[in-house]
Length: 522
Image 1 (cartoon, helix red, strand yellow):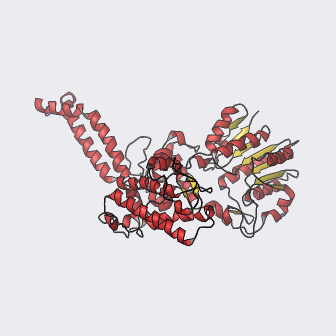
Image 2 (image 1 turned 180 degrees about the vertical axis):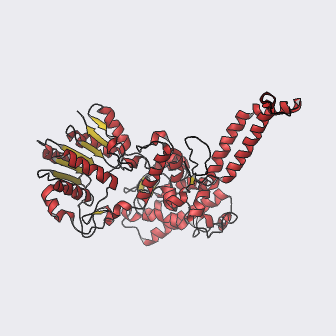
Image 3 (image 1 turned 90 degrees about the horizontal axis):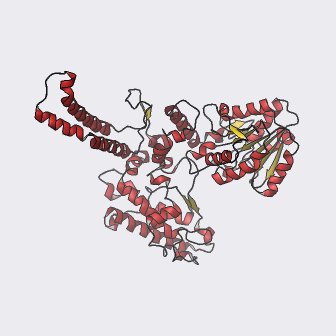
């Protein structure tokens, strides 16, 4: 059993209430149990009144436990038995994730993104930029003062939320973020500020065509940047959040918040209006049978593997994995499973969507070479070039020690096609390469949003031959994202119930592709 920071005060209060309830029941039933010391009539009546209120007390008890557990913004995980155990392990999620991921998430999953102002208004002057930021900062100061019912002179736009004067009784202002985020996340006034912040920013955030994203009826296309902040000021925070999501760092200084207007930003998901990503994960994605994605015995084991998965992602371990000097962004457990499929089934053609830095194609070609699969080839597709200087894809974050496209194995076995995987012209090239092949295998590893995965499933998985696999990679994204491959696979299998089966024997405990090893059987 894993408990994420059980709040001791809540436990003591709950224990006291339970003791009182049990004591009352004992007084009532002592005579039947022959425990001696029969109660008086008055005591019995009083005790029965307590027992009669037990349902209400039970409801209050549950409510109290939930509220106290949320005071620290941490999950109390429930064991299979529900009983306390001295071997329980306590993991504060704010320590586990770190401040920013605790609030916004562990991977790139924006609700909506806004460009920097120079992109929208190329001729914007420094004077205009400064004036806009001053206006926005003023609006933020007024809003924060109103939320806390203080004079706006008490708000310092250069201080973080917990350092403001109104918080002096709660914080010294010197605390590290990971100590203040959990209590802040459960503070009702802080949550109100989070809502209001979305409303204040809405009139300032526009798309690349100079249209305010909030799209209120009175909002025209903005001809100059000085119009920012002048329209749609009467929108509600609910409308602002529905259209644009939440600002990822409501605890930041107001100057930092205002800068997202000029520099561009991506807003975070609503996630059921939970106060943080960690709250949402704890409430909805852990100890939940509907999201038990790993092929293990119980929810506790699933939670441990899930935590490891999020830590693996948070630490970007996949960017430090090399095969023959080339970054290979494959979970090592799945590397073993896929190489075994290649060795065992010996496909004539492996189609890969999502080349990235070429690491996977390089790895699979190595397995083909070692297995003496002389005629086997790989076709890999990506919208970006494989290699550029010492960086390969992902905005230069993949540090390549060599160009994979210049290796002997690549030249012998790999065909790279640049373009969008769903482009009909690109797909026709791939389809032509698959013609006449007795064994065709596919791995889908480009984008991981539901719509793209659904389109690739309908195109590329239908090229897979009977007995071979369509491996839908990074199924894990659905569990800590908004939507993703998991939802797309469910719909695909419902449309083709007789063609593919999920082969969970290919999942070696920790997998990124849970329920994504689709084997064609017909």
